[in-house]
Length: 365
Image (tube, rainbow, N blue to C red):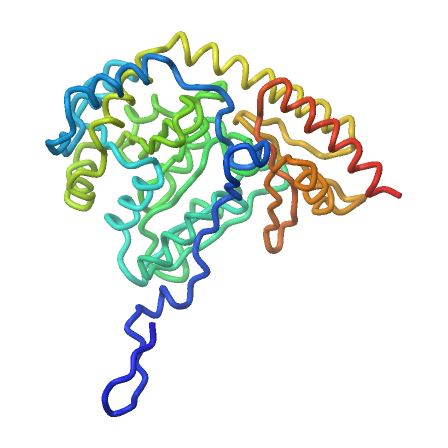
């Protein structure tokens, strides 16, 4: 905000980095019932009933006391579930909170955060807030990463690298052998953002035993149907966890979310059933979109990335929106645009594909 001093001079008190940045823009969030949301990779199914029971139990006991500041009960449960030492786990208010903590812990003003492109657009905003520089390396056409992603920066001090795996918007994965190779070659820690890893064939948790340069972020938003709860966790070497504990907010996870998170990760039967349904919907999306003429890479997330060269795709997005279906239209500079479509219920997926077929015929005229 601009303020005028008594002598009439205008002063801008906001940091120049904040004034200059565009800021992260989330996907459209209509009011409930206004549209079918296949645009923000939410899970279309209700979370485990054990989660709701855990929330009710904590609420009935009362909320007058502060929660455990490090969510130790969840750390203990996660250590048992994932086979990672308890001291290697940090909890956050969603994985975005953890990405913010990581950026604040490792990167000073003027230093460099490395990102692949196209990928999660929040990463760049985190660097800008910190007054740091973001350095992007484009994926190859087959969604592999060139060796330049591993190199030291010629523009300054490279302090941290983010790697979403599976990637968004493509849904593609790098094999964990390649992830380990990248981590070993980088002159800084590598954050592997595994927000969608529960839908993939493999993950990178086993790499934690081979190097302390890898940090893995997880979330309950996608594969546990808890995007509205806001709970995430990461795995890292204890020395990194101890440093991040100094940076995080005092009570960044509330009592309700901690209890719900424990119940969620312990209900493995629910998660496996949910995973199967999402993967089935994803397969339908991939196959039918290819039949309709789109280029769709093999996805291991809960969404697909759909592009084409013979017609613009933005009118298709607009047609879907007019008919009550939201997908994500994304346009990356120096790369191109496409539609990212989240896996929905069988009915949602079928109706969305029918609308897309109509839109393609309409756009092709």
